[in-house]
Image (cartoon, rainbow, N blue to C red; front, top):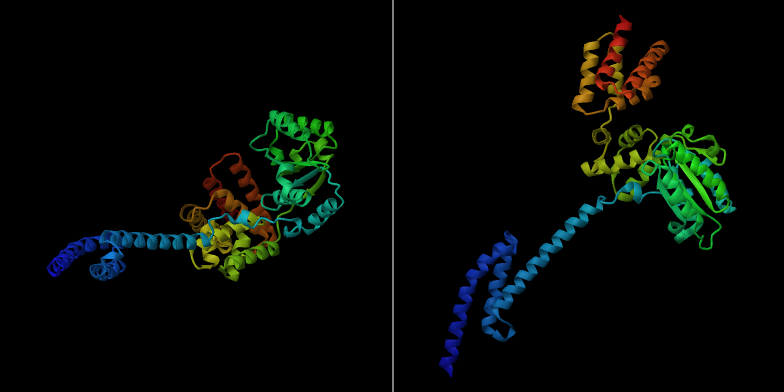
Length: 403
């Protein structure tokens, strides 16, 4: 019996020796680095323990367990990496930080107070929101629905983008069917038409007839950039609210709140750069902050201007000063740098010139002359002319006038 036991141990040791080679190869599968070698060393020790106590498990089972443990470790590391990446914001911040109530809408307190009074009395008229993009029109409409209907707001709120669905069939089918449907215990439902100024004239006429046909059932909220594109019969049936571009203080306050919530370090000149690049558009400011936050640990002026493709105000001023001083060649070189190297669109340069004219330290007569040339170049670019040619012509006219 003793000799049989010895032979059994010798066979087990030989099996362990053969498996050591497998374990060395397994090191590449386990981790491929120092971590893998540590697993193998630990595995050898555990394999030897199997010789002394074979009843605790087979060596094949041990190898499988080592592989499983390594895979679990790698999966945990991958999960940690993904969590770190998502911490910087895979979610779009303009939706993540969209105000849930009218009280959270910044920059238009005079408008939100009037809208709150309608809600408190449960007496909402048809509304027309007019103003540039990113000023809170859509947010205010959704906030009204949430405050009126609570958790049931989506069942009582129909949102249509009139720039996509702009024909008369949309009014005849979707809007009328929604207006006819039951209210679910509420006095009325809301139909929100975004970009309503894109509706065709026939569609607007059909919408007017729908407003007449269902005077008590739905409430219409129309959003547009230009109220002049809405026919008078519709405007006369709505309470008109004009959303102006947001003030610098409102944009800066929102940027700092988001940066604090996301744990982002943003400098004062970074906030000023975001405010300048946004030009009253809250969406631009928030998108710029999210994009700049990915570029580095600190959001500063340089990162903001780089990510938003916006020219610095001093660069615009230098270009204009060179042209006004008669140095067309240097002014043209500066323009070429902005368009070719930085990649700024000609229309955006026109916008920045228009915004900055009265901030330049130039005589009023030259400012008026510059505004005249800006207006002419903007019209030609809008009509389809080459942007760079028109901007060079603008600078040339300034330089010629100086001579």
